[in-house]
Amino acid sequence: MAVKESKIEFVTDPCPIKPRKIGPQNVVVRLRRRETMGCPFPGTHVHTARQFYQNVFPNFTVMNVEKPPCFLRKFSPDGKYLVAFSADQTSIEVYDYCGASAAADLIAECEGEYIGHKNDDCSFHIRSNIFARFFKVKWIINVVQSNEQLNRECSLFTDDARYVIVGSAAHIPDDLRPHFYQIYTNNEALTPNPRSPLEDYSLHLIDLRGGKLCDTRHFKVDKIYLSHNQGLYLYKDILAVLSVQHQTIHIFQILDGMFINVRTIGRFCLEDDAYLVTSAWPGANCRPFRDATINSLKHKLLVYLYKRAKYISNVTKDPYELRRFYQYFDQLNSLRMWKMQLLDTDHILVRYTSEEVATLQANEPNAQPALLVVYDMECQNEYGLPVHVFTI
Image (cartoon, rainbow, N blue to C red; front, side, top):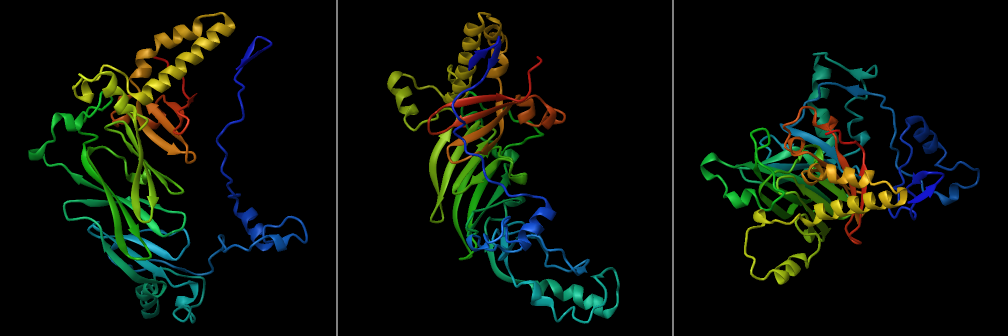
């Protein structure tokens, strides 16, 4: 931070997070680059490798195509496989994509640009057989048992398109209620409610090329938002999983078809934090839920906000910022993690909000106040980025 003309400017060293290079998303620009091979200057095409067409306007459409009894999910990044969930949501079905010419003979004599709702024999024959022409079953992989169900809105592909990560959840019966300390594993744990019931979750790593289930990680008595991959994020080979119930971020590395534990961020942030705590208080044998201290990640956030407020107060010779920190300390301490995203292999973006929002008890949760925090997992630094001002 620097003071210039009675105005505080937050100027520091260059941001350590390198922005990702995202190509243009405009269809016209992408089509132009496809035709010019992405070379804006003449004679530079020799330095560019032509890429597969990503924007091709279809010239024929078939409506109401009959498909197998399954839930079609998405293509793999290389376009070779189509991944689907079985009708009972216990298995993964992998289809080989046979290419656009696979059904050429089937529609060769069709006139026009589409087959709509006609019921003639020719249209019925095409609708009944065209899916089987384009897609051939390669694998049917049983992933979970009958007491669990795969979430068909949860799937993450690795960059090499070899593995796909899917999630499943199992309801906890009323007659097998978990123990109190299984629900409250630390002093940041949330209070369950009917709108956000606890379940047993599992993440599965599936090899698309080998057609087998490689590894599974279980999260018992937890709350992980699997739909739309909200509680998961995959960056290269690093997978982050947010446990909303236990306010913990699990970091895994995908290596040779296995989930490798890297670190757990929450009550402790470093591997030796637990050892240091037990060394400092060797006689302490209480449950983590009874901890009187603030957990490590929340403590780092509060320390950062305190130092920021103190610095501004010293520079401006006005205790206003420090007073605001003390005023909102309880609200800041009560914040809970709701969403997260990996920015790169070292930095993670965490969205803090109130417990009512994290447990989906608030109306329009996405419109509620929040605090964004960038956390450096390697250097153990935090950069607070408030996007909404608390008006409590």
